[in-house]
Amino acid sequence: MFTTIQEAKAARNQALVDSDRYMIADFAISEADKLAVQIYRRNLRFCLDDLTDESVVTFSLPAAPKISIYKL
Image (cartoon, rainbow, N blue to C red; front, top):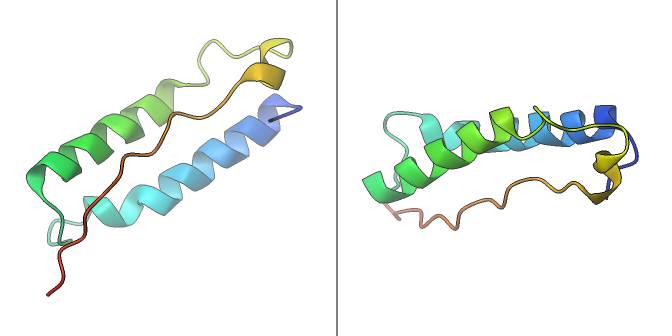
């Protein structure tokens, strides 16, 4: 999926940006979904810790949780 650590880091950073909105205090998701997003974001932050130039070619980002957004 990735050919360099920099590509993996850029994708990870984008995934963090994409999930920022779920952390807004009054965003309409359940507490269970908010916890799932918090765990996902923590996994994203640490997923690159042991990544090497050799292992990057088989690396994939943690899977994003399925979120149910309440309709207001």
